[in-house]
Image (cartoon, rainbow, N blue to C red):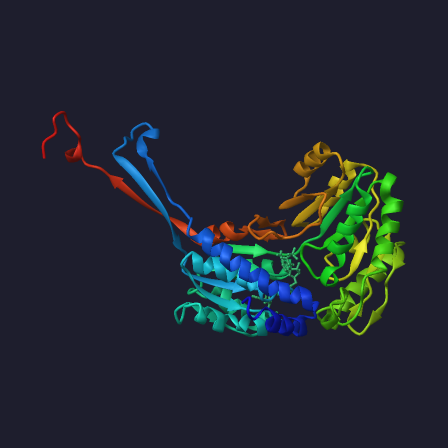
Length: 412
Ligand code: NAP
Ligand code: G3P
């Protein structure tokens, strides 16, 4: 993977419009995941216990537990990380002893095909790794409901995830879905650090990340200067050809652009103020900042998956928690403040998988647990968590007999 990071990254960039540098690092990040997974996989342990914890049982009853594979894992990945978010499923699935079927995204199907060569060269036996290309809407139901599929590991939109959950039947599901990650900014936040986190978190890969910063909830004492600084930094963002590593490039398709524009227009019609952007050339949307966004606007709740950042001004931490939790999504949240005790207490109240304190929402590092609540997911990804999710306990209970009893001066 590392040898091919540049050529594969270049294909990835052409497939999904990801800036070349990020596309190349997606390949090398996946190599790191494979290495870390192989290390973690060799440390997966079982456990043993004696029965005498419960009345009526003695130490003659001993349970020995190990982990065994589930069988055939169906791995379905999204367009925005087609190589990494298929690889982050393939590695733990193989390490847990399963065989794998990958259904790559139709936009981003080419780079995952190279797993066939990479894994064969790595010594994976024929038949262990399989890949099926084709539209998810056409072959998805057949695959997820097939009795030969023992588990579905899916990353994609919440709508698709909910559909899969209805069709798949009784089998384990591991879902990483949509997000609407909110950045709560308190008056004492470090302004520069917060601005950097918000701008890079909101606009890298044109906002096409589930963990993108998708709404900012600033307190009154910092709101004006925060928004001004975010706007200034946003105006410096490079726009154009991903081959030249421009941060803002084309969205995945024109339908997505239309959808993002719809959210912007709805917000403006309901009174939001455009501070920059709201401009389109082909499939390139300029990074757009909306101030005075209110909760009756669609952009306050829907996932744009594009370069639009709404500011919803708040008056208290309680209001921030309420607005954060009202979302159907619960992937990650952020709190920017110098008062770590307060941040920790607010974090306890947020109904999300992960709360970043003084940092942008993001999946990495890849051994951290990564999960979404509510419409953002089912189960937990992350190196050892994925191996666990793609395996199950196997229990063998020893019922020792009286014959084996140790007696005084035992002779045998
Ligand atoms: P998507 O439209 O849901 O597609 C994701 C994958 O599912 C694709 O491979 C797609 O195949 C396949 N698919 C579509 N319909 C299916 C069906 N009925 N049965 C089985 N598979 C089906 O999502 P996307 O547009 O690729 O990615 C954007 C969305 O994914 C956003 O909502 C984003 O938040 C979410 N996402 C979440 C995470 C996370 O870690 N939580 C990471 C990345 C993306 P086709 O390409 O052939 O349609
Ligand atoms: O949308 C992809 C999701 O997994 C986020 O990954 O590393 O960009 O936070 P990352």
